[in-house]
Length: 539
Image (cartoon, rainbow, N blue to C red; front, side, top):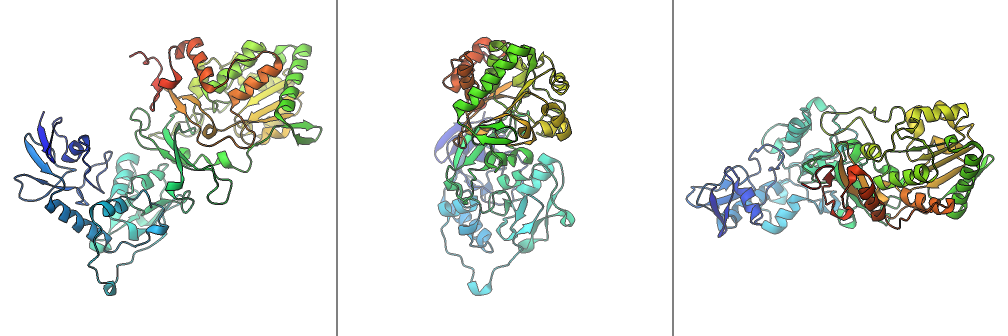
């Protein structure tokens, strides 16, 4: 393998390693704009120029591979002068609107100018700058400010190379060159949010996040996207205080690198599917229905009512008269607690999560899967598939009056079955309990409503479609009096008289790892940032 000396530091690297990546291994930062590790090389920005001993001129470090005994200088006088020249050129017509730019705090142009330049512009203000379109609408999700664009072509390459659709291009030449869509057509792909990620400046911004918050006000929490069975790794950017004077706490989801799952990309359905966390239909307090009226209650009263009614129905009609439909939106810990209480504790056999249509979404060829649930695989491995009866049979029995009580944990039945079918199933039941995070059509027929925490408000694990167990982490506190589902089950178990011994989420997971063969030997604390694929924990 070739040995290269970079700024008086020697390193041995594999053949064809670029100077930029060799320097990165030494902790030497070489600034760049057009280079992106997931896209083809174009040598467009010239920001990554370095001096190579014996070379007649500076070379681009992003596209030139190291050679044995090569000597590189990344901070010589020539390099410094070249960087200043590149930055001055990029800033000639760039608007000085950093205070209002959404990219402020994450902008490579800001960072590189502050670190490598800080020069005064030689452009005479009287000569004026070239002005280009601002707030150009590229569709329902993305806004383009052409004045801020530095023509790095990252967005163009992303569309053609990752998404596989030629949606963006550079039109005109020289200082009149600008990014745009072909024939002015709006962007259509399901991966538009990634354009704001790859853009190194504030040219492409997301309408969803635009002017909502400064990035330095937000906390970052590693978690998993709940949008489909892929289990893409994300960061939740949040703030406990409502910065934009609404109840909004979660401000955006950003992709987190995991080569085995989503690389560094995230589909728009997952990226923008977080709004239910702070929606105004959130369930914040337990409630009990009396006739046509529904009133708030404390947890003790609500759980006492559920326990009493379940006990009465089981005594009069037997455990077969109770049906439980958990959602694969729940974590492994939530689902396991449901099974422990209802199946192993109360002896109820009508438990299943596979409602008709549960995995019939529209998939794409990149990340998005037809199963729009993050934990269907976990529900299957935990044994919540057709315990005694399938979900479709349970709702049929409820519509016919054979199942007297339905306990629904999460999900939106009406979204899958339609409102007419839900009305037929729930309207005649003696007891309907809905435990979930947001109000939906099924709540109109519930006798007791128990508010649960969302994925952003609790710790736990999801198991993706290929059996990879990954951790979700609490980014914000549960809204009002809502609780994680496993904790609700634990509290209910004490009221029922079959207490579950869980005090924290690790207790539940550790029991899963002891009792469920597929999870055997896993450790909650050792799952790591990228999770563990079942069957490989001991490798």
